[in-house]
Image 1 (spheres, rainbow, N blue to C red):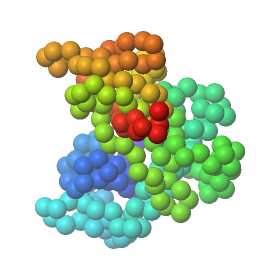
Image 2 (cartoon, rainbow, N blue to C red):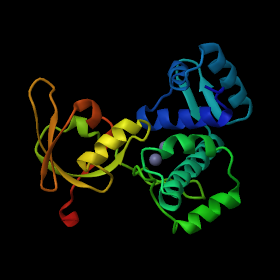
Image 3 (cartoon, rainbow, N blue to C red):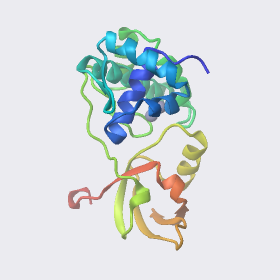
Length: 222
Ligand SMILES: [Zn+2]
Ligand SMILES: [Zn+2]
């Protein structure tokens, strides 16, 4: 793997923060698959660039400038994914890797043209919100399907985009963003989740369900 860039670090810090709040440096080492000294060195550099604040024992935080940079890269990533699917015929399980590479290289004009061509979209093919040009981002569900315990009708909001096998599996079951599903039950001893998807009963392992994020169906959603 290539050496992670400033942008890769900033994006990882942003994502780790969105998932769990405080970000410890060893967590970044894991996520980016780099050594602890490499992370320390980069943390000094990012502090000098005023993209992060780093307080010992409290972890790393993005400054407003760091957050804006993260959202800019994420905007590129998600627009590129959608462009690859809608304009180039890629399937949704094949675009994350391409976007990981391309996100660092496109110009503002290229970004703008994709946005216009796609009709100012608000989400990537995996249901993740696309940040606006101004650097804001819509809230999204962090409610993992794996935590569901009681029978309930749900809307799939987004799925984790990093594992293409998992994406193909979810697609074959109809568990995709925007799908209305019903959690029926979970089989004993941490067994598979039983879901109603349209007219079909499907089973999903808890491991796969962890990567699926849902909201309850409001009364006005039907
Ligand atoms: Zn992606
Ligand atoms: Zn995506």
